[in-house]
Length: 569
Image 1 (cartoon, helix red, strand yellow):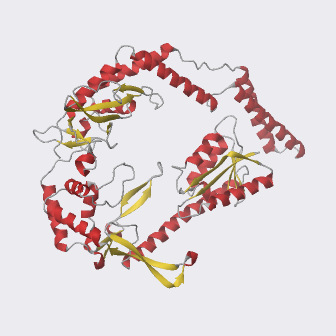
Image 2: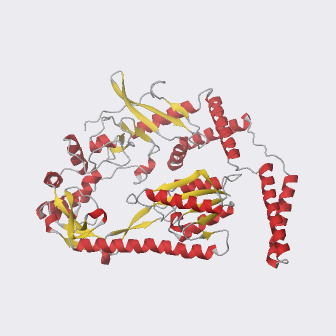
């Protein structure tokens, strides 16, 4: 019997050798049973929680491998049920999926073999125990954090303006011989505290979040932390706003206002508001950085700004006006890689303009070129239509799509997604082997009724497969040039109709489906600033077949008339 091995540990704080220990025990079990381990399918998910199946790429790879024909392994070995999942519904579904494709699961530590009928009850009990472990752990952690909050300790991570100082208990010893930590207190960092006080004074004097962020970036003031998903580093308006509303800086700790809830569909955690009775407010005078006058001055200024009715600009359908922007979310600044957004306009006379947010709000990007939204859309739509329907392009796109379709069909055949006569014969032979085993079992047990019924069912299925083999006709998977041309032509015409129509949402959805992104590069032509646009059109919905359609890397002339006034910011 061929076996795969799956291992997992859930936290960066755990030892990576846990993976080695799990694998060693699984290998010993396989050796005792006389089974062979398929080295290609000894896979591990590291530092990933078992609370959800989402994001566990190695486990998903094993599931996909189990679906192949022929199967590369017959059994999956895990050290413990919790390594599969700590949610009973997830573990039950996972086992059923593997069994459907002919793969059984052996749990080494618990002695569970899913091919045995008694395994269902044992798996259910262990699944509930694993799930309750997470619930109990979360409750204990939350209880411990609440105790630290009430004692004036910091229950969370790092906070700008403070350093974490552990409070040690010399009478107790923790792991590795170190003193036990009773809690973590916050100690003010005067250099950062001065920045915080200045931010409060600047905002109270009338400077906005964006202006403060740009000023700090221009002065080279170090930001709290680098961004996770952006190449630029620096202060941003949202960080400034969050700090101006952080009550820690006035010596008050607001805790337990929200809770994390895991989405069962995506596996991601989202914040939910707790009831007011659950909120905890604790005064910690030694945390105070700003005076009460500074705090109240910021509150008054914020109330004045909100009362002034300043229009909020922004794309991605956040406002009614932004829903009319055809290219929202598709435009990228070539200088820093940020998504281009609406950065000005929206008044009675002002034109709405696209620009780089890292220049406009942070001052960390050198691209200061703005362009009117109406001009960009008109000229870019015209450029797209010109290139999509230029003579000879249909033949080039048809050739690309035909190659992509051929590659996809070949990949599906390799993965066994089509029923072939060979796969039917393998199934028939497997059923015949089951018939032979059941016949032998009946002969030695004087024909138990359950075995006889099972024999009839298996033999009926074998006869059905025999009929399918006799009537089998190979599928014609060839796609003619005419079919591909018709598909491409239909897609182009549909795209043109949507772009020429009045339904902006439908046009934007079509663009997002067929155009991954459009990169805007600021250049000069005859002394005037313009944007050179590059990108590709993807007509089959697959990223493997992208046709460069707009000027790229200067190989074609830049899109004409993409000019706009220079920013004075």
